[in-house]
Structure formats: C-alpha cells, structure tokens
Image 1 (spheres, one colour):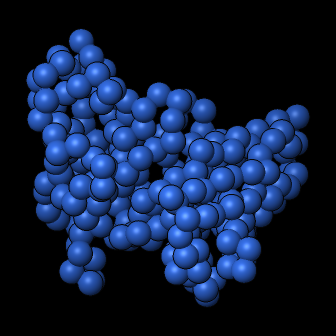
Image 2 (cartoon, chains in turn purple, red):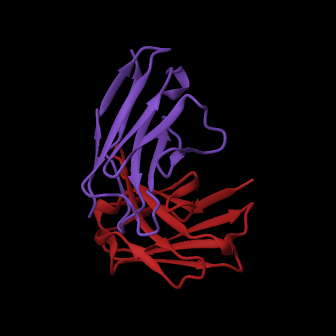
Length: 112
Length: 117
C-alpha cells in the first residue's frame, strides 16, 4: 500500500499569514496514463470533506485562489497564501494513482 | 446541482449486517465511478470501496474484502454498500462520493454506523 505522510500534523497560523502543508508518498504517484493523482481535501468542523485540489495543482470550482498545490513524484505541497478564519479545519492529501487509494493522516489548521 | 444522500446507518451488533444506500441526483449517475469513504469517530479518512460506471470493476480496502460489497443500480441512480460480519472497528461515518480524476469530487453528508453490543 502507498503510505501518505503529512507534516506538520498541527499548524497554528496567524490570520493573513501564509501556511504550507507537506505530503510525501512512499512511492511515485505518476500513473501509467502520465497523470499524477494527488489530491487535497478540506474538512471543516462538523462538515463533509470538500475537494480543493486534484491532479497536484488543479483547483476545484469555487475554491479561492489563495489555495495552491504543487509537487511531483513523491513530494507535494498545499499552500494557503493568506489564511482566513474560514480555513480552519483538517486538510488531507490523498493519492488515487495506486489501488488502494490512501489518505494522509490529516493536518489540523487553527488560528493562533 | 449534484446531490448525494446517504441512508441506512444505525446501531448494529458485532457480527451483524447493514446495507447503506446513496441516492444520487443532479448528474448522469451511470456515467461516473462511485466510491465509499469512511471516517471513524475523531479519526482521519479511509477509502473503503469504488465501483466502475457499469459495475464491472470493484475495488476494496483489504480490511473489508470478503465482508463488504459495493453495488449500484443505474436505473435508480443509487449506490449501495452491503456490510456483513461487522466489527467494532467498522464504526464510522460512511460517505458516498462521485469519482472524477481518481478521487471524490462530490461527497454526501454521511451516515453513521455504530457496531456495538
């Protein structure tokens, strides 16, 4: 199974400041079709998960442009350029390249 | 508007069975792979199972293989998860999701399954 490792697991941030979450996979996430199926999800307290980013860097419709994804191979990053209060929640990376699909442990983003 | 509504959760004894349903609307259900993902209380997300548009391919996490069956009825725009021989560790909120680009782009609100005596 592909192990997804996120860091940090807890991220206190100041409003208006940037934030960055790292996600590393135990093997390359490049699919045989040439795509890299690395995705990011946000889960606000008491809500269902919401997809933010798919295939490394593609923002879903309605996702603010302060969210961006980058990376390649086994090393990926989610960045929030300026954290807002509504960004509080848990963020998960997830790989859909290899069966079984696997999630990272989650990163709790909170306001200082 | 895409909508996914899960139902069928509840309290069940260890060793028991439960069938979850997911009613889909707002998109052409028969054109999409679909998935179930679960979340144990206070824990992270775990992918459970995925099914191809026509049901011809199904994939499962190892911990549920042989016990859970994912299925669909395209005529009823519905996804199902038959869960047998339930264990305490299957206690979780179960979310159904539409699959786009090898992941869920839309999620339901979830249904809670509690396995306890």
